[in-house]
Image (cartoon, rainbow, N blue to C red; front, side, top):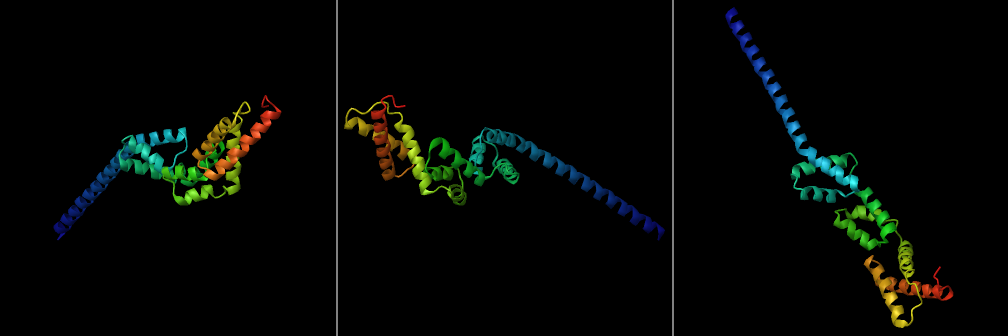
Length: 207
């Protein structure tokens, strides 16, 4: 009987050793897997951060740029998910800033801004949120500001109707390119050209 007990203990001891070895090997394999994954995503993360440092981007825009650089899709998805989780990509915030800057610097209408955001993969909900505070009044004022800036390029009173309407068409076209409705563009263009002619007639230097 004692011999049987010794044999059982020996078997248990061997099983324990094998179990510990298996756990150790598993930990090593896991560590290697983590290290391999980190090595795979490190260059992707580095490129993504450089792109974001240049300017803010939507999630879809950044993913497309990384895939264009021929990074593996799995690594790209891992990096994108990590950046979203850490708040470095936020489509709603991106849309708000895009609308603010493009209206201020480029004079773009709601329609054009929505089209631009959709091309960048921003959801309709985030587009709606970013454009919610832009009223019809805001659109009118912005269109007029753009038109007035263009009208200031008229330096002399037009010599005839042909020259006058050439100025009007150029200003209306500038508004249309920014997405403002044709009727609004024509009306505002007409108003600012008339005002500029009146200004030049009373002050030929246009000051």
